[in-house]
Length: 334
Image (cartoon, rainbow, N blue to C red):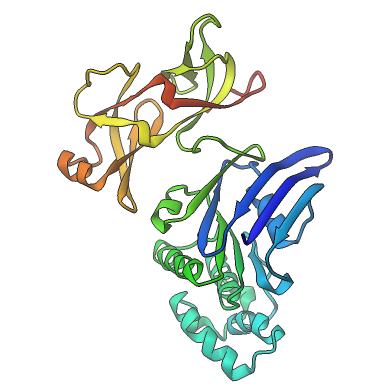
């Protein structure tokens, strides 16, 4: 294993921000940490990078300080040129100037930075600064490359190029790329392993279709109704009542043009908003009183001919809705 976390807790002002009894992260692949704001994603990256220490437990890394690099959301750039920033790490590692430039040139070209190589970093846009920081991290070829929201502020074309470069980097022997993202579909496009975080803990369910709701009904009955602030509602199999956050696995949502005859209690009528490729599957985004994601195969997409604007029915069982956490009273808004 590249990283092994054992009994790790991180507290800020006495509050637990991260609580991970066991987490193993192997080399040779890309791993995406996904969760809502405040779930502990950035805190976890800082612990892995060694820029912060756990309050309890230990973080074991199969490497040394020069084998890990963190690219932050708001990176610090040296007061020099684009090329000077990217070459800085190689210079620290004793690379000769000519060799360092040879390594950096193709990388900067792929990031669209070669024509900006002599520009001072002080005048760059946020997206350009992010690409410089990515180049500075990628050029080092470290065992563990840690990226905090690497596609933020990037144009679509550059985001696609960065995704491809991350996949290539993670596939190299002895390497791993661990990153946070606000786009869970990114993990599927990249073939990455997904680690879901909720309130500083590992989530037992995928954090797609997450809704804050009020669970109503009686404790005697196994099925409750989830009332969302937008007016939508669906049935949940749970022994919980009151404010809660719930998640629906998009792989358990069945799409059809007409209501289907099944034992599933939930059948929401809506319209297709967008489609997005996820490797061999497709993410279908539906507006049905709430925005709901459903995963279907490419073959199903072609067979149904689904496109934005189509009216569909989204069917799922009450047991497909998982309660992630109870919420304090007054926080049941989506």
